Length: 281
Length: 288
Image 1 (cartoon, rainbow over the protein chains, first blue to last red):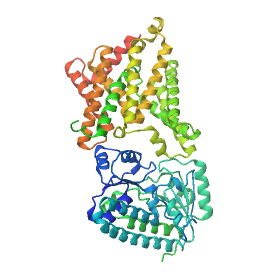
Image 2 (spheres, one colour; image 1 turned 180 degrees about the vertical axis):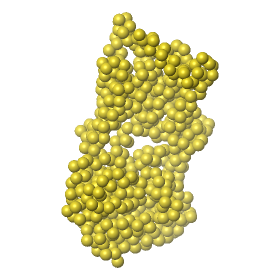
Image 3 (tube, each protein chain N blue to C red; image 1 turned 135 degrees about the horizontal axis):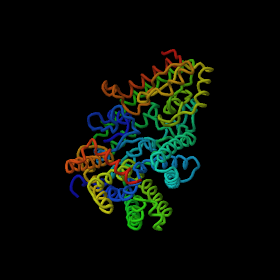
Image 4 (tube, helix red, strand yellow; image 1 turned 30 degrees about the horizontal axis):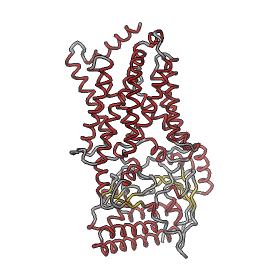
């Protein structure tokens, strides 16, 4: 099977273990939006037993090819939000997202919410089982193991982030909306939806002002993006720059050390914890 | 069909690529002669502004791109004409004006660059049947327009004053040509990507100019070179797993270099170092 981005490949590897051959389309260190289509990748997409992609134009080329497949394709953004419509569930709607123009509906990074990731894992297990019913119980076992890890991760995030002095994060681009919503954080973003968009000077000044008045200590950038304007904002607001990984792709380092979803998320939590002044449990 | 064109997407890529490879140089021949080789890329930049503007005011981004590109092409033609022979300056205004307007409008509309880019750039590997039909229709229009107007356009490229005195409808031909160029680039870039269209307008023509004699021969030879580049480029890309648009363009560059080197070795009077300077001299002398 073929997966469009790193976290989806992670989910597939965990569910399928050695029964499934997972091809991750991105190369380490290359942002998924910049992914160039080659004939190898088109062949892989067309011939795979299952394709797992993000959807909503996150990787337009990949989705266009996937559209022409005869086999099954799952688009993650078409999986319903697990926090909605569940009776009595903690919807975590305390968090808010502020920034240029776009809201949660435009943020594809659903996998940064471990509960959403759980829904993705279930979907992957269901899809694999319907293709290969003989191994349904294996896929179920793989999924349960990963879901257990995700629950622990979720608990760790919730406990840690409940002890913080501040609840506002400043990020380079709006990639952490789902994470913020889940744990009651407020996301302020420097630019809009795309990492490469240039913020306007007025927004930059407003943001610096707000950071000073609220005592925000950190501007978060992403591993693949250059520091750029985030550095300017940090200097202006007397803050420092730290890294928060939206897990779009494994960086070359992570690839070498085989760091998975869990360890990257734990690193994210550590970064958040020190930026927000949390009393870690 | 045999490998590397054994799969449907490769066949669609081949057909669309062959049409673009055959027809883009027909338009490009006149651009090269006017020293406006970078026009294709310039129109790509204007289309970027057009799409961003279209998203901002809520009209169809495709039509906005087409109208902005056409208006821009006409304007650049006027700029070039009024400010003498400075075609490169007119093009620079177009490039930077287009990209800056695009960036500003995109920031204003709050649309991500991903959504803007998805209107602008196709990949030759994602060509669909309906797009093949669109490209074929475009190719037919180009062939017909060039067949009807090429005498006049060649005459204008050689000596515009003479063309005017001889009673050619210079202004009309200019307009037709500017519109044709804009429509070609904007339509084809959505299907196969701007790099491929813009490069196939120029590189085969540059190669054909080295070898072919008459102007008509340049049209035909460049068309042939364009098609060869597409077939070889797609094959190599499939073979080695490379990005196909870039590979096709690299093949066209290789053909140009090969033809040029063969040209040097055949005419020892034009030594590589002095060849260019000598040419510029000749042209300068001609004009006065």
